[in-house]
Image 1 (cartoon, rainbow, N blue to C red):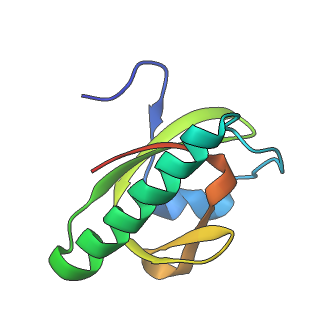
Image 2: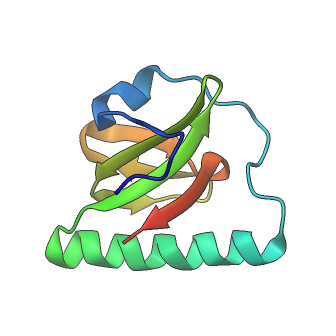
Length: 95
């Protein structure tokens, strides 16, 4: 079940979104938890092709996408078809 207030989008749509430069998480613990979740998600994506639910925010508001994470850089996660989602806009991952 999706968290209330989030719009479900397709991964292909993300390439057209505009992302502010501000970090969406404010607490160090939240940042650390996000990094741990990303590490688990990339391992599951590469080994088992398991999809994760990614809650994020663009300039229009909160959104969620269900997809496999293919790679992680310092600043973004890589989804299928070279779609990039900035890490600083990710609120939560459900694995």
